Image 1: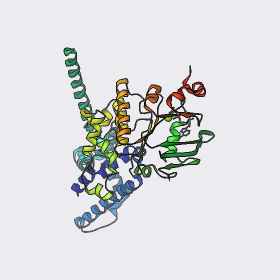
Image 2: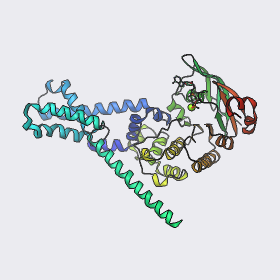
Image 3: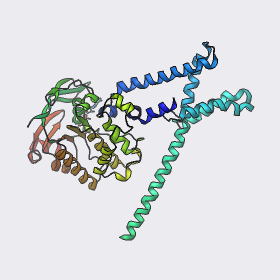
Image 4: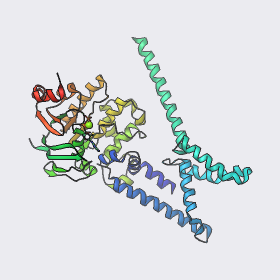
Length: 162
Length: 247
Ligand SMILES: Nc1ncnc2c1ncn2[C@@H]1O[C@H](COP(=O)(O)OP(=O)(O)OP(=O)(O)O)[C@@H](O)[C@H]1O
Ligand SMILES: [Mg+2]
């Protein structure tokens, strides 16, 4: 399953999806049929949901409507946002946190949900792209620093030869 | 010489403003047509009407003799018409090479091969050629968002050529590009025009650039065509000097 998604993200389709999210107008001007790709993204998302459902039924051996309330959908959305929307490992990380955090915060007893809420709000203010977004920014900064260091060295060399 | 682009009587108004007001012109195969005029005279709006980004209030556009008014930008691009925007529009998170592959991938294969085929859609070589052509070699794997403004401008232009277009509309490609790079850009555009037989329309405020690059120049003022002719003719035209060039 994850392998198939990994393949999809690396394919030209995945590139088109990124383009669609970042700048649909420019994507359209490059021949990317945004309507068709949007439809496909929606269909693939729905299909993944369907597969998850098919896996869930044998797991519990009993299907009732309670797990399908709105609150679950919101929980799932929250997992994606906390981990980092648009990153392959974002939802994995988000799900891990959503499962582990109640355990870690058990000592706070009833305040767990409040702490979780405040933490999520703080996270979104600091980094709207989730935890992996922070990591991504950090890496980009390091790359930029490395590049400017290289430039400085190159410039120094140039000045020496002149 | 056959007309690649025929624009007849295109008009576009926003509320009460007639941004483009009955503009007609032809562009012939292999030509580099310059489009100049004061700020707000309707140049970018004219581009957007030709390319299906905006629906013109009136008029007709033909590419290679075929009516294309009302087509979506992606359909026009598939017909071999590509463009750049006045404001920089690269994909900052994708690398330089990925940007170029993206710009060409819809011209390769079909939806199915783009899903199941190679990740680069068979375009790595073409992308690297373009990277070399625009002298961006050392930046190929950098995210485009980390490049300098001028470098991003070059990438933006390079992206317009990845699909092997017949007709390219460039909106201020030289804006913010420094003098040495400007000479380079002019060379590149000329080379693509000659080697690939691509036809260009170029909006640009840099007179040096326009007059030395273009085979013909069209001047707009207040939504209308004020003059059209060879660069030297246009430069000497009293009405053009009055409205735009000054002194
Ligand atoms: N989407 C829009 N809505 C309302 N008015 C618009 C819109 N786009 C352009 N205009 C108006 O249309 C006129 C022409 O604008 P346009 O961008 O085509 O000018 P331009 O010739 O490209 O100028 P510049 O040289 O500054 O790029 C301007 O008066 C502008 O304010
Ligand atoms: Mg403009």
